[in-house]
Each structure stands twice: as structure tokens, then as C-alpha cells.
Length: 96
Image (cartoon, rainbow, N blue to C red; front, top):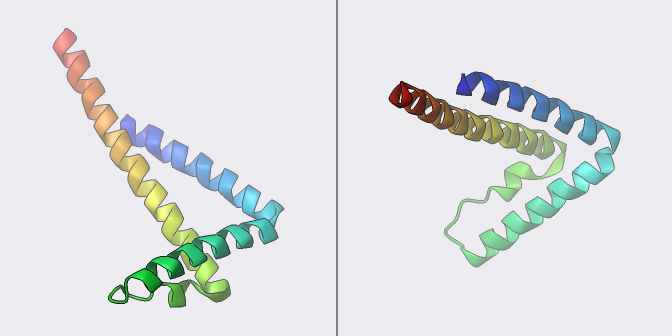
């Protein structure tokens, strides 16, 4: 049950995210650029770190950043949904 709720939450979040990004693409691009600047600052402080900012630059980087963000959101929601579903099952079995 928890995974089903997490999947529904992911679908709704993805649709809302897509609508908001499509409504004002310039604002979304500015947010991605700001995240890219933060990554570049971290890379500048640590010269041994891989240069991820090169992969995130340009229009393909925006798509990559969006895909990574949505996949991360899905993973987080599935973990939370699984844990809460297992807790709910354990607690309901214990109360019987």
C-alpha cells in the first residue's frame, strides 16, 4: 500500500513539476543555472571532485538535471512509502 501511495505522489508531483516548468521555462532555467553555479562552487573548492558541471551545462544539461531530479524523487518516495507501509503493517498486525 505504501508503494502505491508513493507512486501516486510521484506521478502527481511530476505532473505539477512539468506544468510549472512549462508555464515559465525561463524561471526554471534560472533555477537550474543557480544549481549549476552551486555545483561549480563545490567543484572549485575540491579539485579532486569530478566535474559534473560540464555535463549539466547547456540545454542537454537541463534535461539531464530534470531526469536526475525526478528519478531521485521517485527513489526517495518509494523508500519512504515502503518503510511507512511496513510500519503500518507491523503495527496493525501487533494490535490484533
